[in-house]
Length: 472
Image 1: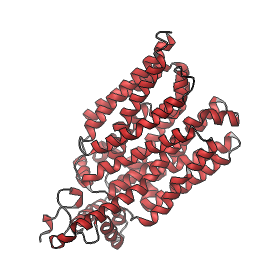
Image 2 (image 1 turned 45 degrees about the vertical axis):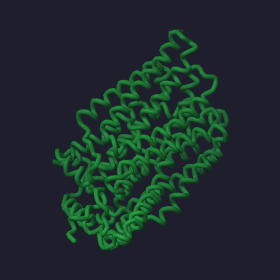
Image 3 (image 1 turned 135 degrees about the horizontal axis):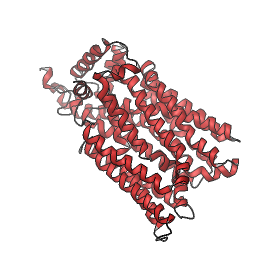
């Protein structure tokens, strides 16, 4: 039987199993999908940890400030220092994932996060609190790169968008859990709960294969084939997929070693521009300022307590992100992101209008509800597209020989933007709450233009096809 009659599993058009084994097709397919799903579930425990770390500061702000007698400046440092650690993690993430593998990088991240949570739990002053927050930041900086890359490298093409979106789904699940659980337990107990996904990662990594593409890149051929068999099914015909991956790796390994300055070469400039641009617009739309300090934002808008609004914020993210996961491989990346950006723009306008009315002492009874409506519209729209799409696209657009350097740059830009937004949010709100949300709305509107003019559609293409089209 000719090989070309059996499509690569990434093509998602025909089953990748030999016809002489038709009686086993169903069992093999279930087995292969099960391993892909198990591997994805283990990896996205890192995404859950990411969300838990980011969401930790919002429900604990008043309690930590009271217990440790922190000023607003000291708590702003605590809230934002996680992004400084994440920036350093981002700088090293690509190289680490290239040198010690995707699994090795995830294992290292989990250890840093465990160290950080333990430090937060035992903290009695601002310095120790910040050290712990920094360590968790370094860990999630690595997770933010390696998890979507690992998922993209193990998933079949027809499932890649949906599976990669689980990264964002678990981020919002982690943040939502922190918001909800943090409203009923102490901040020290919440720090201990943060250890759970780290422990699940350390155990789960023993039961899943390494990324076949990374194994091929480092020349571990037997392990490469073994990993492909575990992901595609024991008796699957992996010959065509293995040959395509190996041929792609061979071509790329002939390229000289890539440095940061090489990313500005004309043949790489478009994927770099897309990756960096998406992260800039994602962050400067204000997500980390709104997310880190949602509780205080609701109080500033006129609520006596921010708990109800924060819980609503937490609950709404999960089902909306699940909808985004379903739409990712149906509607495509571009339309989903443009609709999402329009929604975040509307949410910012509504929230900014509520603060404007409050400043002008107009319609006082409507202000709190307008603020909550705006924030909930914002987070709903963000969760369906602006949150997951940039990470999915980042994991797809870079050839494997520049993925480490380019991915590190893109994640660094993301965390630099997150730090700038989270650190300046309280100061900007003190300057002008309405003005703050107007600036965020402008960036959301510019995202639509960027996507329409520059971002390619990656739906329904193999990683090799995407990268070939961008380089041409």
